[in-house]
Length: 161
Image (cartoon, rainbow, N blue to C red; front, side, top):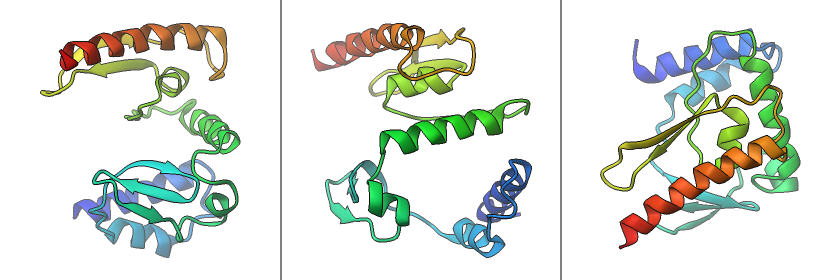
């Protein structure tokens, strides 16, 4: 099975297993699996996307949520975090979540892995022993996120020197 077909099949199966089968159009799942997205984005602000080459793109295709609220609206992000917790709980899933937001990593992860600057290698690993459900603004999440952030700052200062 081609890689894109496999991705489409897996996303459709996860949607069914998470209770979203009534909301997922199989044609969209197929189309998303066939798309080759060669543009990489480094950040989103409001309804604008910024590519890794600093090209600014107005996001017309994102849907009603982004048009009304913008990218990364805190209430939407919190709801998505809660939904990811719901989908993953009780399932034997491995989710690799890549983020630049350290609190988000601690809030969602069982482990946080810190990579070095070039060449990228693992320089630190933090277990997250905080009981679920977690809140991104809780003291235990903030404390562990601060330790991880300190390690990241060490790495950035080493790389800058």
